[in-house]
Length: 244
View 1 (spheres, helix red, strand yellow):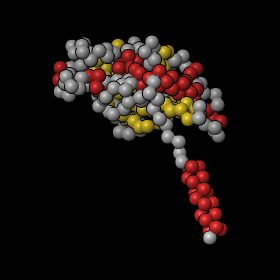
View 2 (cartoon, rainbow, N blue to C red; view 1 turned 90 degrees about the horizontal axis):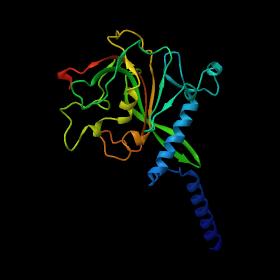
View 3 (cartoon, rainbow, N blue to C red; view 1 turned 90 degrees about the vertical axis):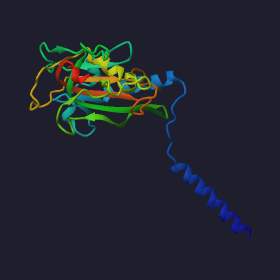
View 4 (cartoon, rainbow, N blue to C red; view 1 turned 45 degrees about the vertical axis):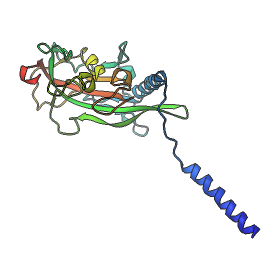
C-alpha cells in the first residue's frame, strides 16, 4: 500500500513539473504608463536595427541565412527623425515628388484639409518584455493595399474620419491616429500619379502608442499599440466638399 502511495505521489509531482515546463509565460501589460512608453521606445529601436528598405521601399527584415542583404542599411541608419511626440519618420532618398504637394493633415480645416490617395501597409504591433527581452510583436494590419488589392486607397479612416461618422460620443480622436497625421506633414504627395505605376514607397512613419491611442478607447480596439506605416501618397488635393 505504501509503495502504491509513493508511486502516485511521484507521478503527481512529475505531472506538476511537466505542466509547469509546458506553461507559456504570458505578457502582462504594465500598470505604469512610463513602463509602457519605455517598452515602445526600446522595441522600436530594435525594429529599426533589424529591418531595412528594399529597392522599392518595402520594409524587410534582415535574414540570418541569406547574405544578399548584408550591404543594406538598417532603418536606424537612414536618418530617422524623432519628433517630440515620439513619432519617427524616415524619408527615402530618390522616392519623393519634386516638388510635390504639401499635405494638410488638420481634419478640422474642412476647406483646406488634404485628401490623400495612398498605397500603404499600416501594420500594428505590441511591444512586450519577456525575461528582459523587449521586442515588437506583430498583431495585425489596419490596411495593406500593397499585398492586397494593389489599388490606391483614398482617405483611410485612421487618417481622416468623415463627418457622417463623427459624433460627440465618438469624435475624430476615436478614429484618427494623431501620430500618423503628424508624420505625414513632413512628406509631400504626388499628384495624379497613374495607378498603373508600380509603388515606389516614399518612406516610413513609426507611431508609438503614446502618439496613437495610448490607453484610450478607440474604433479599432487597439490600446498600447505601436503602428508602422510604409507608404506612397499617389495623389493629394484639397478635399472636395463631397468628401468631407
